[in-house]
Image (cartoon, rainbow over all chains, first blue to last red; front, side, top):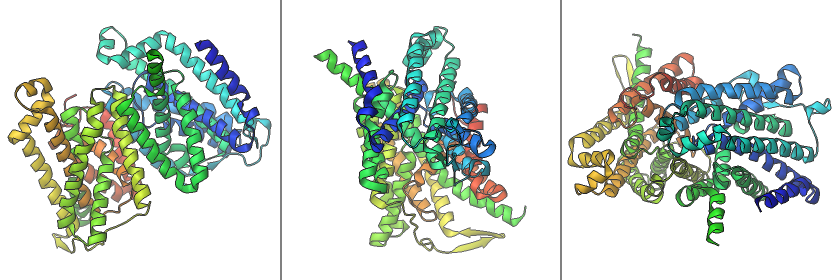
Length: 313
Length: 287
């Protein structure tokens, strides 16, 4: 049954943009996948390990700015900046993770808030990173490696492949020793420690992996959108999006973040295109309301809710 | 010491007293029930709007809008306790954080929607005048804000440590079951803690509004400052919040003076990360 649902979902994902063609649909579909990648990456630390990060946008920004700098400084194709971005993200993750992951979860969350604010101010004042103005990717593609396409369709399939890779990795991790360790840590840190699990080390691994994949999403964002500034690259609201997508679908489940993205990204794009610039403020009121309702009534997210109905019927 | 430097330090201390007051609300909630209120900065923001609108609509001054803000926020605190915090307290940590975090977003962007993104300011002569002592110029608004904040923070500490109510609240935070057996109602005590914490935050917000701009996102910056103050002072410690608040106020003023206003927050956040590395329990706290 589960296998059948999965096969149908993959088939739909492959043909979707061919059936619903048109620039708007293709763009929304590609963005949905991009956010699904970021939310699934957040899920590794926030969902599986249960350490809530509100500063993941910093890692996203590492990827986006890494790609942008590869072009603006060295004239390389933006995607060549990917290793730089991922490296910077993993390094920052270690910097904030080593001291805070030894402590209770609230410290980690607050440290990520402070890190995000710190980096946002720094980025806004560093000329190499475009300061408050931001950086552009190549305006006209110089070779196929610039990955600059007028249609969103190539991005859709690129993102689909990356997302599939990330989900496969997550699936494998769930079943590995690390997956069991992380679930034990999330269940009870003290119990996990008394069973001999190196708690701090595994939380740090989860954070570094999560940061690396989030940076990949950031680099892909720059490749597609071709522009990054402090608001779009390191603004705290993007962290919130990752968090809420994962929580809405089901944090700590394989497909939860994807389901959250499938609901929220189209919702936001549609509300933006209907309400114009005023849309985003209202969108975040709705986001806040949704998070609040999830927390109070269904901390497991939509997947837990569906599983509950399944068992009842 | 040169008069300019002295001026900067005095300014920092006065600002720091206000930081201490709104941070003690955060630390009180943490000490009572191990919950971090991520909407704390937005509580300050709402209090600032209460002050602004009281002035703009009925022309009330600080003597009217400060108690009004305290009352409005205390009510909000109780509503938040019963509506959001109590249902998620027993749940997983993710739910606890999402609860107050969702509330923060909801309040912040509702304010955006209701009050627009415009920066608003109270007139500068709300608390008029300034005086010079020993070469240092004191602005009345900041002196009043600083002294009121200092007295209230000390008062809050005395309330917690010297009164029956304080003992009962501490009893609940030590051991909920045992407190119940002694005839203390935990729900009532925790609701009172939220009312006190939010009320103190309300006073702080109203005081800040007399010399600082009001905007829907002003709480974002203030919340991070409160986190820094609370973690530097030690979670749950009101005296810690007081010392750390004064310290952060002075550090911020000095760094604005020496390296520029843009980077003053950078230094404070960096200090926060350093504290987490070297002394995570803070100055006065236990881990």
